[in-house]
Length: 286
Image (cartoon, rainbow, N blue to C red; front, side, top):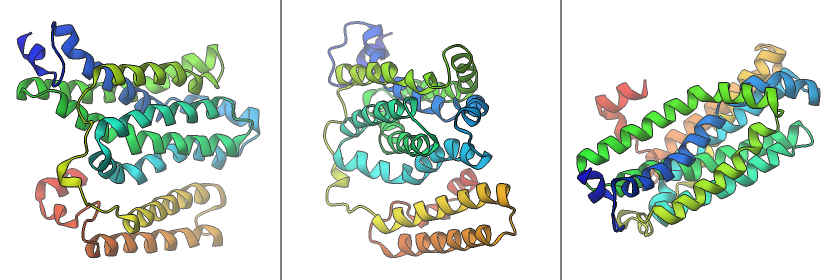
């Protein structure tokens, strides 16, 4: 109890319960974005029936979120260091709520896919990297910090598993639009809790001052990930030997090579390739 009481930085801790509120606040957003990675899967047949969409269109409803999430994840760390983790994290729920509302009100498949991509941007660019760094900074005691990070990781795993279950319940009772509409009150509640209870991460990291954004690496990463995803989606629909599909692996190869070249040449790469000389890093990446 005393560990938790002394853990919160910048807060006058009066009880164990109060000391845990920063973690609960940060896990709100983390749970929300992990649930949304899988919550829509069970509702795809309903979406296809309502919008008359092809299988490829339904795949992009899922992939637009995950591709945007993966493509911007590295740059999100730079944003948190450069502008302050709390500032960046608070922008996440706001953008996520707006994108979720757009998904819930989408009149057709194109709007839904674009809104899902914006959800992925919000998840990657603000919520996920910043939430972990804020959990780390909120608790000074090593044992309490380790416990908090363990709970944070457990919440992410629980959210991934709960996504299809919650999606089935909401889609079967209230309709598929509530898969996204439920994010509006949850996101607003999470945003208010972070504003009230998370006090760390207000200032940029000293090490990030003067660091430049790795625009070349980011563009190359987006091109490569979008191309390989489009190749898999189009290949499943039109065949992997079709002319349109064969172009996409070439685009992916160009993007991947450009990414490696950019990370070797820029002074401050978003993914230093020297990391892969570590056996631990290489093994975990595989």
